[in-house]
Length: 150
Image 1: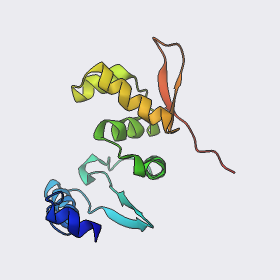
Image 2: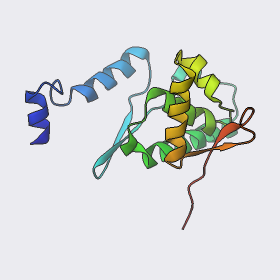
Image 3: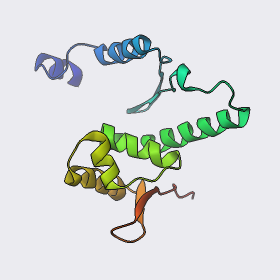
Image 4: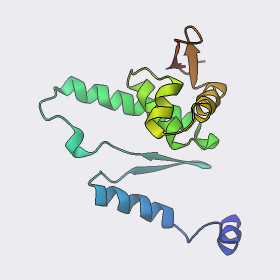
């Protein structure tokens, strides 16, 4: 019912067109087809790295590390899926899950956005409890805030 009204108002194009566009974009770019999983009222979409990005000489341990990073990012994204993460915020989560350092200036430079926009993106992730700031105000960095286990 809601989808029909949104379509008639021109807020969505057509039934299932987003899914088809994502699959086609992956195919045309040489990426594996994403894995779709329904989680009640939410959807989980798992994207895998481009096959060319994998180093053939990498030992099996590297593969399990990469899978662990992907699993961690998926877990974190699923925690906040209802918060409509933007591209910058998803990048921040991937960087942090990969063990890299992230600062607001890095986000601004990477995406060509203002420092204020980068700070707002980081603040939103911080408020949601996914990341936290560590260190001095001028030199500190963000890190993942591990989910609490009951």
